[in-house]
Amino acid sequence: DGGITQSPKYLFRKEGQNVTLSCEQNLNHDAMYWYRQDPGQGLRLIYYSQIVNDFQKGDIAEGYSVSREKKESFPLTVTSAQKNPTAFYLCASTFSVDQPQHFGDGTRLSIL
Amino acid sequence: RKEVEQDPGPFNVPEGATVAFNCTYSNSASQSFFWYRQDCRKEPKLLMSVYSSGNEDGRFTAQLNRASQYISLLIRDSKLSDSATYLCVVNVNYGGSQGNLIFGKGTKLSVKP
Image 1 (cartoon, rainbow over the protein chains, first blue to last red):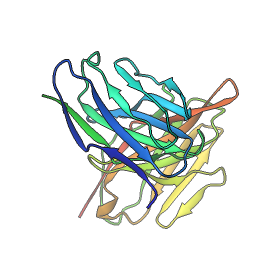
Image 2: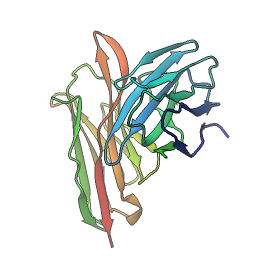
Image 3: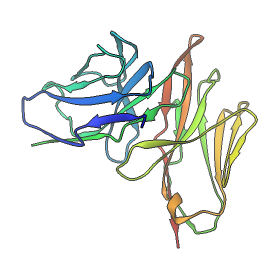
Image 4: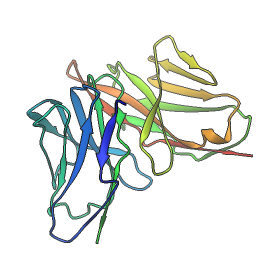
């Protein structure tokens, strides 16, 4: 089955810890995205990548980092510099920027 | 003016009602428009694309008004299962090149028995 897989579904972060959220897709999509959604709020773009080995900052990149070493994979690291990381994190992918994006089922990150 | 604006609702309607949502966008050069549905604590899912000529999918009709820069979603014969948040999504152009999709904050619909 083609799709986007995010893991883990739930994640807890300790003070001062970096954590990495996984996103894998087998849709052969070129572009991949990370969004953050806070309760009752819209999606905010963290980082995106339109091609392997290249990525761009979105609107709220501070405290986050990404890599795109393979077409299928776009992991997001939430660093200790992100002081308010509790949120629902969504990964998406698409063939091109003007096409609909397809989402994984998300990771909920909380602070311990 | 925000890039994509929606009435947050909630729209509370009885089963069987017809309900319509509008969404305005600020970039007149935008080319791609979509409606997504997001259930509580779930990921957004594509409901339908919005074409210049308008399009219909069963009980759902989407329309685009470029002159007034808004898109609309009409739901006929509402079902309990239509209860969700509906996100308006627009592709924003910057300097002639296509940018990323911008998601509205959503309109919440609650269909009551």
